[in-house]
Image (cartoon, rainbow over all chains, first blue to last red; front, top):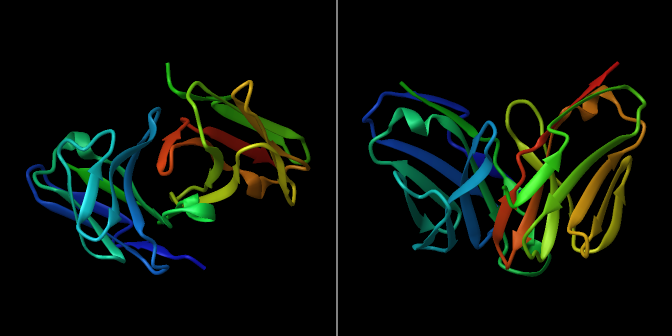
Length: 114
Length: 108
């Protein structure tokens, strides 16, 4: 079974703090994704990575950066957390082609910025 | 207007009822996904389809490419089916565009 894990289920941070959200997948997937999910807005793509050290901006990259130093790990960084970044963050991964288009999701991290 | 619209947004039914959730989209797609999200957040993929119909247990998903419409049906619904169901369309190779989700509650 594909497993995507996220470092925390719940996180509370203060405004201005630097926040790291970690995601690890164990199936040698090339692609990894970070989404945020907000009521009424659904899931929106923040960033995705198609290879080690490669990244592309999604629909809402402002205020976020990412790091992918190893194939299995994709980190989302909030350089200076703000209250409008309070949200559910979901990581996903998949293969590059063929039947691997299906994305496998992690359990999510509910981040509260106070 | 969202590129992916789901209806209804909320649905409450009694155990045993036949459930239909609809998804309409306005963009070109290479495939459509139906996802399930239980309380607590984890999302699992139910179906990925690009034409016709797929069935898995009590779940059936259909898609009409010409009409840009898909439906998810649940037969003999059960309280454990209570979850948020999300439609997502695949544009190109990797970009998923998500609907807002349908919150389904099945009462015993």
